[in-house]
Image 1 (cartoon, rainbow, N blue to C red):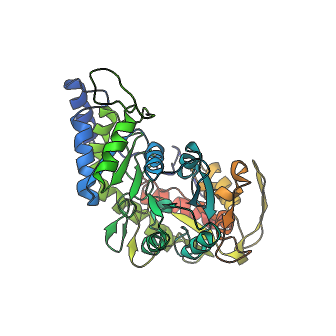
Image 2 (cartoon, rainbow, N blue to C red):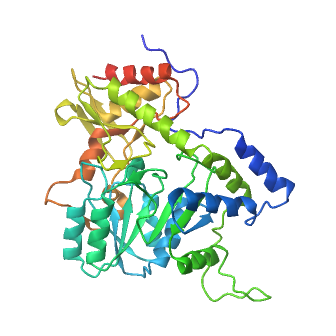
Image 3 (cartoon, helix red, strand yellow):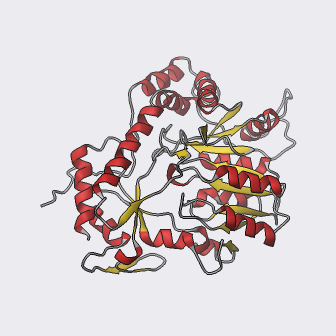
Length: 394
């Protein structure tokens, strides 16, 4: 009999170590508690050193980082922007902030990320598009060289949304460095956290300087408050930057812990009709979230409306809804795969480009996939119970 978890088993909660508190105390002791201070400066340096990039700008969120990346790329009202389809809405909303029109690009099965073949088809239909936003889903690098090559071929700027993939590598190079402008996130459930916050990453000094200016309400260098451009209150706090400094000391430890969780699931499910979220041989994810994809012939009947889901279980078959509900029953947190953007009511009129007509990979992954508890503080015994819960559904 499987025992219910006494305390909630989370999908991915913050893992704190103690150094974070010391850096936060430094902000208080020096009275630098606003949007300037040593913690911000050092965290930006830490990120540049870790990623191997030239400039990093600490901001209030990953979304604000992506928004400024979209502005730097020159998106104007009415411009089409090619966006990953299988992602969280925060990857797309900044396009609409600037009046751009997202066009969604289907996924491929090897990484669950933007399909280069679908991207090529999108350029055939919208040849004037000048910006592409590619997401590294669940910490897994996309086919970044292929996508960047296509962007270069069509004279388009690539923005890399590495919100979920800090520490992941593609061909030995850190994600978050492949685009002209890149965004990472320090949200509470990410590989490291500041509780909130994000970072714009670039090798372009002028772009970094502009983003820094925009993030502080576009104040000009004048003895009074002088403004020429629209600005934003996007600057990172020196307090939360202190949390990030402490977390960066443990990022490799966090990634190793996430990989252990992934490998344990992979071993535990080897006799089930499921596969883990995939990655390329030339990449190393940060394994932020461990996910399963149920084989098509083992998928039970499942119906999803806009707000509710129902299923009919069958012998040897299951579905994400059943597993999700079983996890909740035992006090463990799961999460459906991101609902594709082209299936969202807000984007019902936006175009969606697939590599092959009539083949919707993103929708298929959403239909058959589920994110499992991936917290690195989970014990081996707790993870084994999760494995048994999943097995019981089949």
